[in-house]
Structure formats: structure tokens, C-alpha cells
Length: 408
Ligand SMILES: Nc1nc2c(ncn2[C@@H]2O[C@H](COP(=O)(O)OP(=O)(O)OP(=O)(O)O)[C@@H](O)[C@H]2O)c(=O)[nH]1
Ligand SMILES: [Mg+2]
Image (cartoon, rainbow, N blue to C red):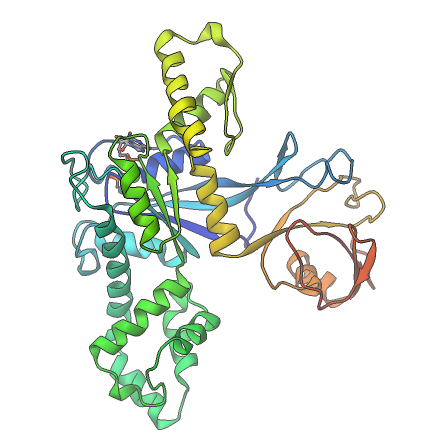
């Protein structure tokens, strides 16, 4: 199953030894190196994880045949791209550790999932320390600084030249920044939104001092690389209090145990348990094949993680990143509005993840340029009514696009 180019990428980031690769492996079921020491990962791992959303087939009382996604007992799993990168240590923007290599990998990420060791049992460089000794809030601040300083380094070289071009009236600030930062997946709307949030004079950039530039880039970072905190290792005793502290500090935080999720996914894959990622419970299906230690481990996960937190948090983190941070909606285009199928008769074949604000006609263009060009109107299957090109799609909409041309 491939992830189409319209899909967004989630970068899994953080200092070394926090559980990034464990999270990645749990989400993708790709076996990768996991180790209790810093810099286990050097080369990035890329893979496909899944968003979980209730499938509309139950509501429409039809049997579906998914093509670009999966459907498990009424749950649609929509593929998304995940990138697990090497750990980041303080000063990475200057090249410390695997510094720039790491930062270069997250250029193409649309959002970041910051895996924090919330138990505080690894120091700022990822070395094991006494449990609870390290403050995870420090890690959150440090990652932000590193990314802002990295952006600053990219821009600083040419800043005075850019500022002079703007003041001479040859090009405006937004277009200049857009072309300078396009390689970082920073779009025009990110720049406009960030400039709106500053009180700096954008017609007089030669007056901006170093601090002003950094202040602006800090805003641009938060707008263009929205970040979710995955408070990992909640299974350790020193974690809980830190989860609360992180939440109180205003960040979007999802408590999780990547290790527990990996154990459940592997047991599920072997047919030992019945478990869909994101579930709040597991069912042992093959108890004879489990030894006593495995039974105890599953019991601990059930009692101390699933019952207590509602899930392992891995699925919730991926869903929150796409649905809340990136404000995506999942829509089901169909060709045949009566049978909810494509031209081959496959029922509810595809789910498209599109940013909130996408219109019916824009969806047509995403599916096929020709479909966008020949768009006449669309049908909202749920409401059974005709919708125009400017209709803004909502999450779980099922739409059929009526066009002037029939696609072959
Ligand atoms: N207790 C506990 N340990 C975890 C959890 N997730 C990962 N670990 C452990 O943390 C250690 C580091 O895990 P990795 O996934 O290799 O961490 P990483 O962040 O990818 O590390 P680098 O690649 O070195 O940056 C391993 O010993 C894991 O078993 C968790 O949820 N709970
Ligand atoms: Mg790793």
C-alpha cells in the first residue's frame, strides 16, 4: 500500500534513548534497532503507520472493499508516513552529536512527534541516570531551541542581503522567505501567519537584530513544525507526576508506553491476542501458547496501562498529530453515489486525508487533474444533497463528484 504525495509526514524526534525507534516499530511493525544507550539509530527509518478512524461503512450499512486503506471490524486504518531519526543532543545545530544529519532529515516533516522520556531516567544526552533525576520539561525546551537555531543558521548567512532586497522594494519579505525556506517544507501561509504574530516591522528588516530574527524564527518553527509531546515510558514509576507537569505547562501531551504497544502489536501479529492499535483492552485468544512470564506481562499492560490510561497512547499520538495538530479530515470519495463504489464496483475504496478547509473541487483536483477541470458539482451522500465547488469538506464526509467527463 503506498502513501500518496498528498499525505503528510510525521517526524519522530527527541534526544537519544527516549524510545523513538520503539515507537516507530510499534506503529509500523518494521523491525528496527532498539537499545538502551544513545545513538542506537544513525540512519533514519521510514515507514507507514496508520491513523485510526471509525469507518463509515457501518453507518451506511454496506460491506466495504478498501483499496488505499484497511478496515478492521468497523475501524478504518489510513496509512501515513513516519520518519524515525537519530537522537538530538544539545548543540546539534552546531553539528554536535549527529547534529545536522538529524536536522536535515526533518526538513520534509509536516509535524513533529517529540518523544520525551517522561520518567526522567535519561540525562540530556540520553545516558541512563537515576530514575526521576532528569526533568523532562528541559528536553521540551531544548528541542525547540535546537530547531529554531538550526533555522537561524540557514537564514543568517543571507539575512543582511535579504533585508536590503526587501528595503529596496525589489521583492517582498514573504516571497523572499518563501523561496529561501521552501526546502524546509515551510509554506507561504506559515510565513504570513508567523509575521502576523510578531510586532516586528517587516518593511524595515535591516533594523532587526539577531535576537529579533531568532524571535521570529521561533514563531515560524511553532507554526510550520507543529509539535506534539509523546510522554513516553509512562509504565515507569517516576513518570506520572511529570506527565501532569508537562500538561500544566501548556503543551499538547499524550502519555504513552511505546514498549507496551510494541509487545501488544507483536503478540497480536503472532495470533496470541486480539488487539487493534488504540484499543483500551486486549483479549487473549491463544492462552495455551503463552508462558507464565508472558501472561504476567500482558496482565501488567492491561492493568497498569490500558485500564489506567485508556490505551498505550501510541495510536492516540498519531491520531492527535494528524487530526488536531495538522487539522486533517478523512473523506471518502466514491464514483457511484448509489452503491458507494468506484467504477470497478469496490465499495468505499479510498479514504483521502486532506487539510481542513479543502473544498469539493480541490478534492477533485487531488484525485485527478482532469476531474478537477471537469467538475460540475458533487453529492454529499450522507445528506443526499448536491454541493457546490466551494463546499468545505468535513471529517468522514462521503462524496461523489459529478464531472463533465467520464474517467476511463
Ligand atoms: N520502560 C520503558 N522503556 C522504553 C519504552 N520505550 C522504549 N523504551 C526503552 O528505551 C530504550 C531506548 O529505546 P529506543 O527506541 O532505541 O530509543 P531511541 O530514542 O530510538 O534511541 P536512539 O536511537 O539512540 O536515539 C530501550 O531500552 C527501550 O526498550 C517505554 O515505553 N517504557
Ligand atoms: Mg532510535
